[in-house]
Image (cartoon, rainbow over all chains, first blue to last red; front, side, top):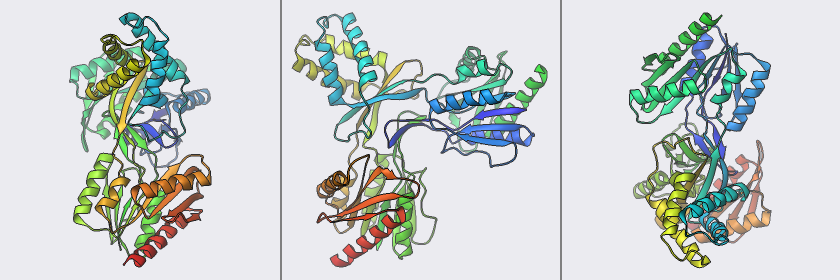
Length: 257
Length: 257
């Protein structure tokens, strides 16, 4: 099979010397990649600079990206060149990218100037509307400095939503067996399955691997693989998760072809 | 000599899965550390998980930290245990730490509620005061979620100032030869020296290594070492900077003792 794996965590630049980074060691992605390679499949592996990845070998192409935007353009480029039989989208992708950063002083100066132009501020609805309008304007028009000045007590960072990568996969590769990932923090098994199933349906995936940060430790990594019928299989370690995903993707691919 | 080096870049957690990270490969710190070790000095090397560092060897102790707060407590702890002859503070330290993160919707809801309680908003001075007060309250009281919700179009991150690490070094180690670092982006030689000298005076350093991100490339790394008399020496590579710092620190130390 021709497999695409995304792993690691994206970063979004704040300025020239700082980023917002999604933590991900890449260890689960590495295990999944090695497992597919061991079965003789070809793997295109898209990852981020800090993440571990499978060692160089035949049948493995590695592509490095940093931001969500770069991930999107890399995937679109791959989809023009290749048809994938399986896509394992494990990368921790930033939901938000930086819009602008400003000191409290400048923020308040700009906001106060906008609000005093308005004569209807004693009415809650108008005030709320004016605030939305002002934040839009500040977010979209205030230029980000090359390096954030350090001489202010409080900074405000405006972050805006990134496009959802998982939402574009099925459209571009309708034939692929598609595995998405969902990481939550401190929820029940039922909640994990519920949120994972909703994500599966919404993005037309074949499987979702749902996991909880509080159940990921050095040697343990609890992962619940959910299929389109709502059936779940639970694995206890990264290598068990990797083997489970490879088996299920192969099985699904055979049943389709 | 007994040398303390800080290198790498700190991160500040936003939530359980994201951080704001100061970029630093640690390569300059590694070069400086190796240069001191080669001269037979003992090095305590404080660094961050992602940064490269000198290889393990006799006379080298490595301590890993992540946040600015951890750096401060680690240094205070070291200063109780050891007296240093030289301190090379090269770590890229976050000027700000996260205070809270909230969706635009919640921010506006809270801000509007606070502002409508106030009857003097048509006057710019009162409005400005009310905004400072509201931001303080929101920043200090809104609880940060374990994982930022993804279902909002814009997020606001409140960052508050970290204590300046460089400002505490001289007080705790009056005998040490103290080298601070200043990184700017896209400024002139004169501006670099001006800002570097001001930092030296303010923090009672013996030297400041001033550098500009736009003059740091693969093989080149322009660094200007400024001393307390305002004299500057320019180096062109990381190994030249390392050698320069070791020479100047040794020389200064000999002249003091």
